[in-house]
Length: 378
Ligand SMILES: *[C@@H]1O[C@H](CO)[C@@H](O)[C@H](O)[C@H]1NC(C)=O
Ligand SMILES: *[C@@H]1O[C@H](CO)[C@@H](O)[C@H](O)[C@H]1NC(C)=O
Ligand SMILES: *[C@@H]1O[C@H](CO)[C@@H](O)[C@H](O)[C@H]1NC(C)=O
Ligand SMILES: *[C@@H]1O[C@H](CO)[C@@H](O)[C@H](O)[C@H]1NC(C)=O
Ligand SMILES: *[C@@H]1O[C@H](CO)[C@@H](O)[C@H](O)[C@H]1NC(C)=O
Ligand SMILES: *[C@@H]1O[C@H](CO)[C@@H](O)[C@H](O)[C@H]1NC(C)=O
Ligand SMILES: *[C@@H]1O[C@H](CO)[C@@H](O)[C@H](O)[C@H]1NC(C)=O
Image (cartoon, rainbow, N blue to C red; front, side):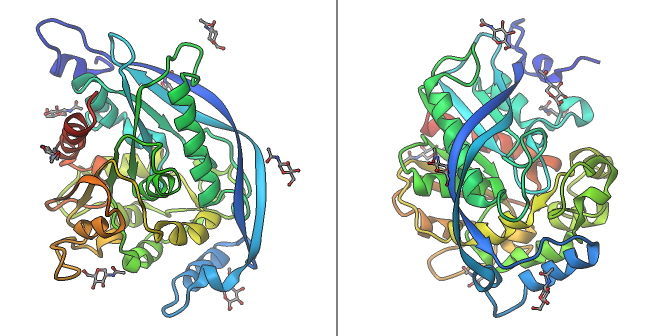
């Protein structure tokens, strides 16, 4: 079986279109104002569950109630990235893709079923973009760190900013050239990161696509409960993570948080829990909420695309109108991005939160890439 079936599927008039990818370890020197919390890092699974029960309690802003101050941290961190170019060389525009919680950069290039679910294959082979996927700082093959005090939302935002700068300078690898344009695509927590990055650096992105996202924080606790989180290092393939890294416990928990009824091949659920399941940190859980609630003056094009049945961002139904002004929950993201050019919100009918794992991924990939092509170019 060929490695890249898309080359055949999308091959035009005998041209061979196969993406050229390289894995690169990129050091970034960054500084971040992190939060300090009066919280003990959970050690046992009982403490992990207690942390979730504390975190989600109605009527309490738990992160604010345990925050004691801030601490500036800085360092040089190793990030694991994959840069892919079309066969005929680097494009002018690179898509910088940030995965969500529970996954690493493989989310964008899933090997399952001969890469048929690969977002990267569509973006590179069909739309001719270069792509850079990265394991978020703290996860996968990127450097890990302290789960409470270090791997927090702001440090990850600084890492995304550093990668963006390196792409514009052509310094990601000794073979890459400067990219004229960088667009940012996220999924879930990666969309929140993309949002915060453009909020802090409104001119640093040429366009954004926020997948599996809304600005409605009312449903985050559903994911926290449904994930049935356990200490990540109790799972064989995650045993090298320190305490405070917590992971979705099993296939049913992954299904609840990420997949909608009748929208997926049962074999990809098994594949995902065995091969893709990556932890989150309690530090990022405690820090991402406040960052996403800030108004954003980003003026570039913005696409929000979220599954109708998305649990953490729509409570299982994006079509419930949040106010007279907005028809859907993703539509209401416009209120946070009032200056965005051609703001567009799309609800994928019947789809769940983990769009790339479902049958409808092709629609999502085309919608994102057509939007970027029309509004930013390639
Ligand atoms: C990059 O690393 C991943 C994970 O280790 C591996 O599966 C993949 O084959 C590597 N890709 C390249 C182009 O070396
Ligand atoms: C949860 O809150 C209770 C009551 O405030 C506290 O005693 C306990 O240590 C907290 N547990 C964790 C893991 O944060
Ligand atoms: C890093 O932190 C140390 C101690 O807080 C400080 O002295 C140093 O100037 C910082 N370096 C950078 C590059 O911010
Ligand atoms: C996956 O398979 C479907 C059905 O054969 C096809 O339409 C689609 O283009 C394939 N996608 C990729 C990325 O290979
Ligand atoms: C680029 O770096 C790699 C790995 O460090 C090295 O093997 C290769 O020779 C370098 N290529 C050039 C053109 O400098
Ligand atoms: C979230 O969405 C629900 C349902 O549309 C709505 O009732 C609620 O006011 C929204 N909350 C926020 C914070 O936007
Ligand atoms: C907005 O983006 C869509 C692509 O999704 C494009 O068809 C349309 O022309 C754009 N509208 C404006 C006003 O730029």
